[in-house]
Length: 257
Length: 218
Ligand SMILES: Nc1ncnc2c1ncn2[C@@H]1O[C@H](COP(=O)(O)OP(=O)(O)OP(=O)(O)O)[C@@H](O)[C@H]1O
Ligand SMILES: [Mg+2]
Image 1 (tube, rainbow over the protein chains, first blue to last red):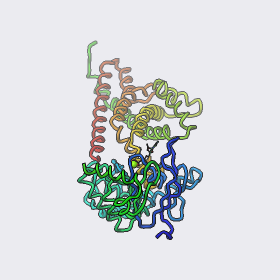
Image 2 (cartoon, rainbow over the protein chains, first blue to last red; image 1 turned 90 degrees about the horizontal axis):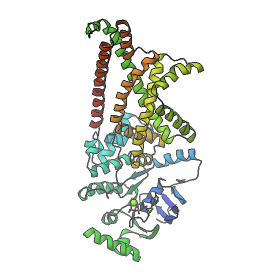
Image 3 (cartoon, chains in turn yellow, green; image 1 turned 90 degrees about the vertical axis):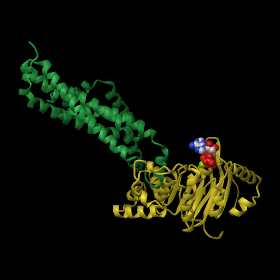
Image 4 (cartoon, helix red, strand yellow; image 1 turned 135 degrees about the vertical axis):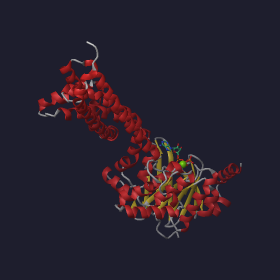
């Protein structure tokens, strides 16, 4: 696997806010179809790293590549905007707080970007919305407005909205953290389904059980560095680093409380 | 000389014509102030500095000076630089721009208040900033300020009486002309007031329907 060229390649990512160094020389290679979990304490830089991938939070140093294209390449402003809008169509992102568009129906949410960016007809857009909503099990809610959905349903719509752009990579930033416990599973099931379809995914999560069950690789981050990484069995069952051990012990204690 | 409303029916069609002009001016200026207000809000927030700065001056001009003066300036003043507008058009533009500035203030505040996750989600899908503003942020902002914009539109209706001074035969000027013929100011001003009140009721009815439509889509 290591001899294969990485699909998503983060090289020496560095990010500072003023004097605060949030990411300190992080590298991460993700192969096509691979699922990588990023875990770590609050403030360790997980979201910053994830959001650097689609340039929502631009890096101050380092490179991000998707296949043969550098995402954060230096270009004059106008050209860069064109480039990044194109790039982002290939990278789906799911947020902790869903960020559905409240003024649009579920259908409107899912079809907005494909209609605007892919120049497809209304019929094609509807078919696309139906296909994606079927996948997340919400076809019957297609004409609802977001305010009438539960948190779990909202997040599934947000996933369908991202999938409608047919992305090559999906990024999840604590997709289930804002959900009531009983609603977490329905979202996890959708993500598992994507895993079975070999979607390339980078998942920031606090759910160790889910990460262990679904992911190929786990990164443990602390204070802007990758402290330890490896297969989930290794990281969760038998971590080498003391900081990893402490984090998991604390996390387990919290989870069992 | 007591009150005598029997003179009114003879002028009713004349007054009703004034009502129609008032409605026409109000609708024209309201639509102008709504769409131009959105446009102003977007350029005030996102325009380049060489547009933003002159715009601030323009905004100050429209908020800090009397509407009456603005109407004079547009109708009588612009002629001197070769822009000779019909009174109706000058009235609609004057009222429309004046209230566009007030609407723009409301919409700017609402745009800023839209959760920044909305812009992020739209950008993440690949929309440009302009596309995200147009399809995601601005529609939500506008929806949030429909009630206060509605209040501005009621104020606009009442201020439309000012265009009588540039000779648009709307309701107030029609009443004045009827008074000029009959020397019955009380009767015709009361009739005019009654018609303003009725138009006002009609506007409130329309606004409530719009608000209900928006509520339903939440
Ligand atoms: N816009 C910003 N300006 C200044 N500092 C920031 C900004 N965004 C994030 N930070 C800081 O960067 C650090 C990393 O933040 P980040 O959100 O990436 O952490 P995280 O690992 O995702 O944490 P959490 O688990 O709480 O979501 C934190 O110390 C945070 O305060
Ligand atoms: Mg985070």
